[in-house]
View 1 (cartoon, rainbow, N blue to C red):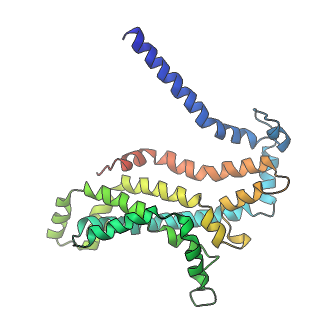
View 2 (cartoon, rainbow, N blue to C red):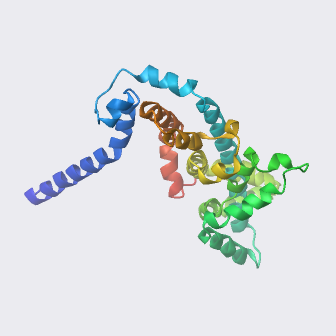
View 3 (cartoon, one colour):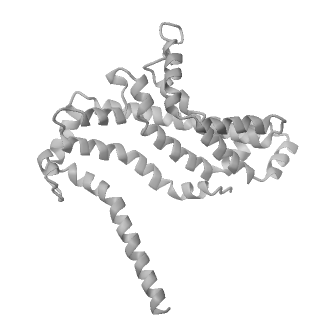
Length: 279
């Protein structure tokens, strides 16, 4: 290895180290902040303190209902993820496996829907769910978990993502299953789904994180304190006249742990799923 090549290699490591420090710094600051008082955080104290138990006590004993918000976010995110994986994978599978003249036209229209900003859909969606109030379908209306979950269970991106992975799926396996007398539903659940577990893992991470961090639509539709999710609670904490930054740091760290754990546990499957790995 020449001196020039060694210099380039050292330069790459220095640059990557610098970028890594910049990326990790906010999370390190949060962890340090959750152990300090508001005064120390505002002063920029960059060391661990002794206020962790105080901040945790304040977080779970205030009137905002952080524990309930954790429960609400977990329920919404888990149900959304399971339904989105099932419905979107079935749609992507159907678009690719079953032939029809209108298939590509319908799929192109579906892709065009990705270009419509969600801000343009909020008012029509709110009006639609509001009309369910006072009817037997009130459990599906405003201020229900259903109104938050249902708009995320079949997204154009996930359908497109699954269809692209179906393209690399060996069609001979499907034909062999049909010859053996397996039903179409059985082929989907017993042959197709077990073969693309990495794709499901990648989609699960994306869907769970999007649902867990959703802010705008839950803010509009969840109108009572006991229905609020984590992002709404964090926003309320920061909007107070005298915010307790130590308590806020605790809340942010605790809200980050579930998504971080899921990603680190499934990161190998996530990478393989994003590049279309089929077992």
